[in-house]
Amino acid sequence: MSENAEAIREICDSIIRRVDRAYVAECGKRNELPKKLWDMWAESGLLSIGLPEEYGGSGGSLSDIVLAMDLLHTEALLLPLAVPNFMSRGPLLKFASEEQKRRYLPPTATGEEFFSFGITEPDAGTNTFKIKTTAIRQPDGTFLLNGGKTYQTAFVESAHCLLVARTQPYDPEDRTKGISLFILDTKLPGISATQMDIGMYLPEKNYTTYFDNVVLPADALVGEEGRGLNILFDSLNSERLLVAAMNVGQADYCINRAAEYAKTRAPFDTPIGAYQSIQHPLARAKTYNESARSMMYLATAKHDRGENIGVEANMVKVLASESFKMAAEIAMTCFGGAGVDVSQDILPFYIAAQNNIVAPVNNQIVLSFIAEKVLGLPKSY
Image (cartoon, rainbow, N blue to C red; front, side, top):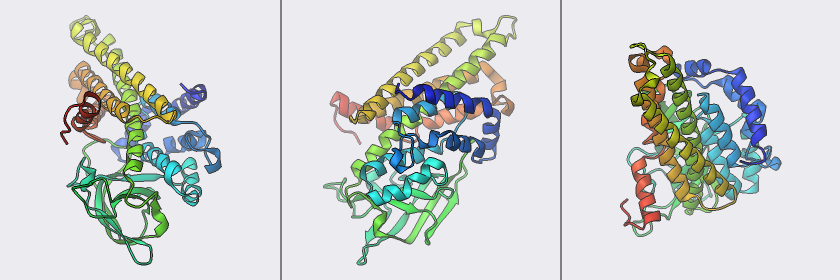
């Protein structure tokens, strides 16, 4: 843990005392941003973590952000919106121009503006190299953006989007070439969005977006044109860890809820928590979750030292999503028929855990990556 850990714990404890799960759950049912929680993140300084003071932040590291996400999600105070906002900052700090940093970063520390992230396309899926959204440079230096994205969290509500687009056609000989990153003003002419009907309780909206001859200024480009892949991967590694923090936090929430219920639920006079068929899955879920949490903090520490975390971030993704799934499944088993009762607030986690096996990237492609990079097995994707 970093030197800021104790202060972050105190801030999170203060937030937990002032806002409860019932409020966040109700926002999820209405598919609305829990504004009171978002405002607390801003007012307490949590949103400013990870930004240098010169850009309006309070300093700190990815480890600090992940700790805050972990602590608050252990109480099921969900704020997925924080993920694209935080994950977009890293690439900007490393690769954006000084002018871009001073314009776009400070408002993300106060909550006045936040970033969404645009990468996923229906046809490409996890094969980012095959994206069809293009941003073609024009004679006057601007870029003409055409195409679309899907599963864009809070795109309409965001002020800007860190967008992945092709500035050169796909080349099978070098598929990494021609991918660029842009800071997209989400209110530019030619942009439209349709809200997606997601079958989950989410405290934010998701959109399919369309870009029809959107004119991007030359200074919207981040880094070098056509060489945005490394910038992208740097962002996705931090995303893996931020989502993992949400998963291990929610897993603990499910485990704790299930354990408390199992202590008192006794349809045959003996509490069901005395049965090994309940004890063992709960103990296994807790063991896996603590393993995921430990590796998560090891990975964030390595990231903060400036080391490559491609393998670790992907391993954490698998561990955290699977431990969340274990926890949600045993929670549903403990609650039995009561688990589908909305008032019990268990079913949303069961659905979310199933979803997080495939989002923001499916575990199968992650395991293939680990098999190739760690075990030296042939590339399969």
